[in-house]
Length: 331
Image 1 (cartoon, helix red, strand yellow):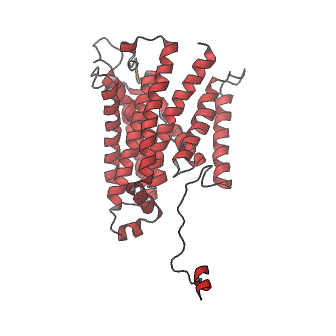
Image 2 (cartoon, rainbow, N blue to C red; image 1 turned 90 degrees about the vertical axis):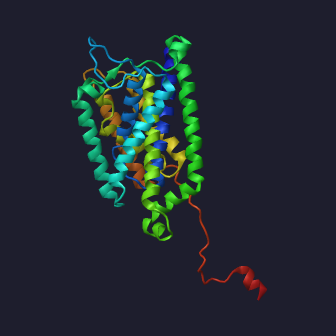
Image 3 (cartoon, rainbow, N blue to C red; image 1 turned 180 degrees about the horizontal axis):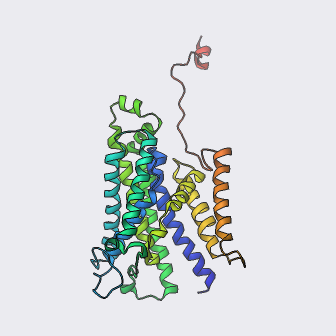
C-alpha cells in the first residue's frame, strides 16, 4: 500500500472520531444549550482510562507511572473510558446545571478543565504527568496479527462501525420525545418548567450522554495513536470541536457531520502533512489557525445558524384573526 492510501485511511479514521466528538457536543449544546467549554477534557479522560485499562501494570523499572494497569481487552477498556468520562460529566453537572445561567455554566466547565489539566500534568502517578502514557496496545492486533498497512484498514472499519452506531443513536435521540424536550428547554427553560418538565434532570441527561460520546472518541483515538499527553487536549482542541459544530450547524446532526469533516479533518489534520516552509517551521500551523478562525467568523457573520441549519417545525398561528379561505368560500 502506498503512502497516499495510508494517508487517506488515517484521515478517514480521524473523521470518524471527530464525527463522534461533534455529535456529542451537539447533544449538549445543539440540543440542550449546555455551554461546555472544556469538552476536550472528557475526551481526554476517556482516552486515558481506556489506555491504562488496556496496558499491563507498570513494573518497578518502567519509566512510566499510571493507575490501574488492568491488561483488559479493548471493548471493556473502551466502555470503562466512556463511563469515566460520563461520571466526570455527572459530577460537573451536579455543580453547574443547578443554575441554568449559561455564563455560570461556562465558567464552571472552564474551571473544571483547568483543574483536571493541572492535576494530570503535575501528578505523575495518575497518567505519567506531562510525559503522558505511551505503548497502548493496538485493539485486536494480538488476535489478528496484521501488518501496519493492513491494520489501518481494519481500524477504519472499527471506528466506522462505532461511528455508525452512535450516529443512529444521535439521530434517533433528536427525533425522540427526549430530544424535543431538550430543545424546548434550550429555547425557554422557564416555559418548559411551567409545563412540568424537570429541566435540571433533562439537561443532566444531555450532559452525561455528550460526555459518553467524548469518552468513546477518546478511547478510539488512543487505540489508534497508542499514546496521549496533556499537550494533546488543550483549550485549542476544544475550540476546534466548537468551530466544527458552529460551522456545520448546531442542532443538526448532518451539520455536525459536515463540520467534523471541514474543520478538524480538512483544515487541521490534512494540513499537518504539508511540508514545512524553509526558514518558517511554524508558518503552516499559523496559517491553519488563521483559516479556521476566519472561517468561523465568516460563518457566524453571514450564516450564524451554520451551513446546514437546524430544521425547525413550523406551525400556523392558532390565534390568528385572519379568516381562512375555506371559511370565506363557505360564506
